[in-house]
Amino acid sequence: VEMPGQGETRLQHGLYLDSEVPEALSAVISYLRTRDDLGHGVGVWGNSFGGLPAALVAARDPRVGGCCINGAWAQPVISPFRTAAEQAFAMVGSLDPTQVIEVFQALAFKVGHDKISCPVLVLHGGNDSLITRDDQQPFLDGAENSSIKMWEDGEHTIYNHCLERNSLVADWFSDSLVRELH
Image 1 (tube, rainbow, N blue to C red):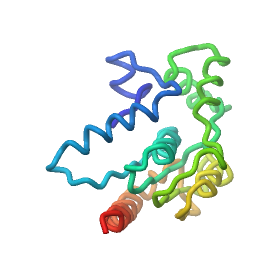
Image 2: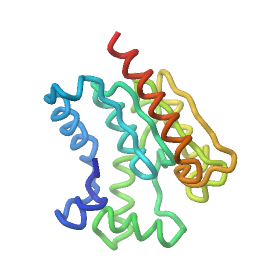
Image 3: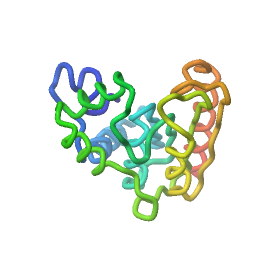
Image 4: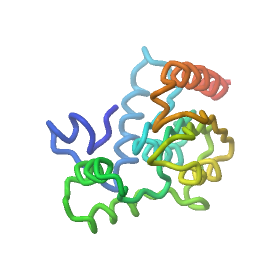
């Protein structure tokens, strides 16, 4: 699912990132649970900035059975990297840094306030030029059951190990969602 501010949601439908994105993702979960052909286990996986809304919906919606966060800020900032900063402005739909910062602050994951009860898997690359391990630590601290998988030579969102990453996450979700059903 593309969240507001990304891809078609932004380019074709004019939907931008705001503080209500976790509620929008909960609406998607509500829809998915009406589909008998999909079963009832629901997991969320967010790559890059998408990891933060995935964590927030996992903290706020008890129907989430597993959450994977791949290369995300828990407390987002406007990146010093030009392309990442341009993406932030585009996601929010504003060239005003104050407005972008307000949205980012409203979405920040706060340990002690945001608590995730489902299993959490954090993915991190040692060569990620955007996100440090410390940037993702709040997701681990805010979950009752969390683990991290690191690739020392991993780039941002582990694209240089995508087959291994995808296989590991698919197996992890299978285990997490099956455990939730029992």
